[in-house]
Length: 494
Image (cartoon, rainbow, N blue to C red; front, side, top):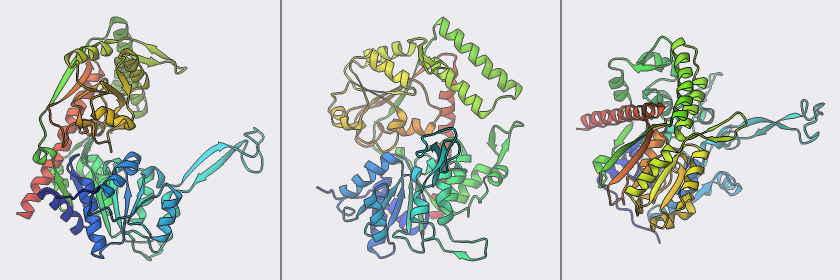
């Protein structure tokens, strides 16, 4: 049974922004209706004869669950036909032009070539005519090469990139495969290329998950470089200063305001705290001390990291490897060279037990970063179950006392957790502000009737504390961007 969608005033503005702006950034907090307002805009444009259809690029979970569900849910959108471009039926719909909305995940955009064991000689070292010493190249054509490249017409003229912040890497192979076909341009031979995409919309609640550096590739994908340019290097040198090692970039004086102004005409900002009637959120830091042996192992690795940093010898790769080892120690277990897991301590498990005693009858959403960490939680708490979306009705009914998962598996595209859950416990903090924010927003959203509590279990005097502080700084940076654009837009439309 479909439902009638009665948009709030701010949702009316979100719809109008997309129907009137060919290039649009929809920067709305989770829960404000980015999906339904986008579908409303698509429906309106198609019915008015102003658009043919829409290609939606989204994370796989969002593609498989959220978009088809939302299309079918609303009475004003359920007339639209949806095609999944991961399936042969979707391919045929594209060729026939028989759908209105086509869905694809970004991993499928580029053509991928990989080395595989030869099927003819079975990987024989001597090889055969089909391979080079037992190794053959295998090419998997991507969506762009199969369904866009070389075609004069497409069944779509709207592009929607859901979770646009996933395109923040300017060197992204996935999104750069699509980018040459999004905007009118002059080819090297002097001919004009006219893009079949006449509208490009990007949706995200976290446009600057790490810093303003992340904005460049997202904006370029949508506007073709009109506002922030086409060169990431030039953008960075224009608006940022770096330290002498070239590792850390900070905004130049006045650069933030300039960037905000440049994109304010296409960026519509809607923040949850301005519109959602949800109870407050409390963040609690639960500190633990590492046992002596674990502390000794931790300090040895930490010293190695700091010495390399001081000498300027460290690379991003080695820093990531050492940081991961440090966080594994604070989590309680580590891998050896043979990938065997060794228990180091149970300090965080003990802290989780105390949280359980504080909330003896309430469902806990427990978020882990490592497989061994998740396994220890499941083994330590008989009532714990591993997250499976099929069990959502049980969770909503309050019949799962503790649900354990990697935050990355539910940070996007999962709704319904707020029906019975209000408490999240981060066993190990994540560097990704986007993952942290999006996951917490699964609980802090429309339908939540109680105060939400977010616990972070932090090993005192360790990298855990630094990660939590980085999250705080990233949140401030992203919020500053959102507030600045919102204020500028208000001034220009006054």
